[in-house]
Length: 166
Image (cartoon, rainbow, N blue to C red; front, side):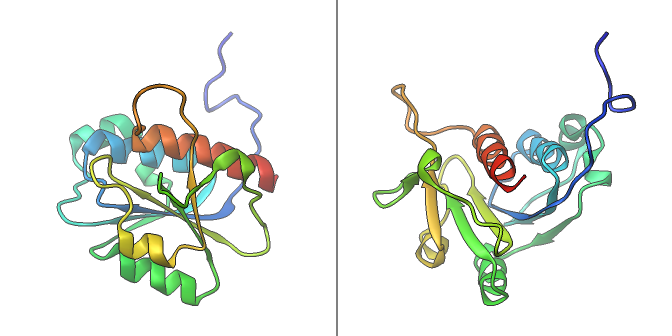
């Protein structure tokens, strides 16, 4: 018999991870970000940018996790990231650049809390944020495409972070 959220034996846990979503405005992607933040015990989701709405398309995908995940809106991702950097958070950006390191080679530290910055599929994480990131990480891919959906990429990195922090 398949178990549901009432009868699973997963231990609820919150990790010192804050997701900063830079200009992700697609409603199903936002809903899915809420879902994975809940699934991986993320401390907070910060949705940055313009025209970010929690509409019916978003809630259909989120499966009501927006009611249990701590979140906030902020127009400026760079201001949010700078603020957390000043508080001692590790700033990790998920982006493919000429200086990014592969996820499988990175050792996450539990010394300082983590801000994980993810960007929209079209433009990714901004240069302003990349330049102040402590680390820029990419997920190795083996096909022709050079990008991955923001939600799938966030799933992969959150799995790796939480696995290492357990």
